[in-house]
Image (cartoon, rainbow, N blue to C red; front, side):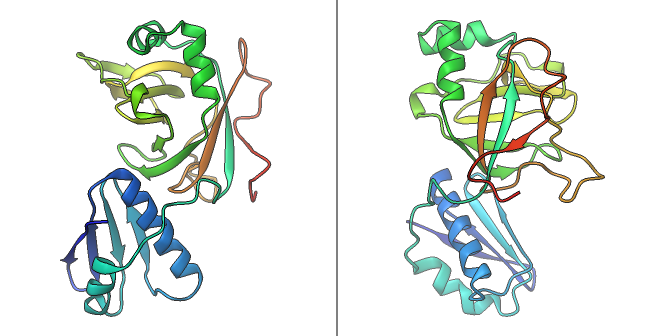
Length: 222
């Protein structure tokens, strides 16, 4: 794993890696070390190919350790599971099916059969970038973004799946809809999805007003 460690202010370090998988693995290992009392840090914030450590008492001490330490791959079974009910009714479902070379119902089957993991969060409060689909299912963003994507839209772009937590402009391919509440100020934590969380999409038919907004699967902690 090739890494570059850069100082950020007086008490933070930014670790640059070469892939999303490496960022996920490093993030998981740093969380493990913090939980074990081996790393004193205020925040650990992953992104696509970086991890920020903020609030380090002695950043210089960690520079060489973060540069050369062996980091095991992130465990696919670690962390809680959240199940999101989804209606595979998105306006781009046919385009995604054509890109994958499969029938529309096969897009739903493949997507629902995949266990995802939140690699990092961003773009909007509550928006998680979920990985898990094999690289052959990467899809391009739309050539012309929509001026408004409805809240709850389940979407694909590049290697990621995401759910729009609120109505906003967006250029991802929309394949479905969920009633899950991704961001709620009255909830602790406010974000339903956080880095490292395992996610499964559960197909439902028709209006899902009777379906719980989100449920934790058998491996969950809540």
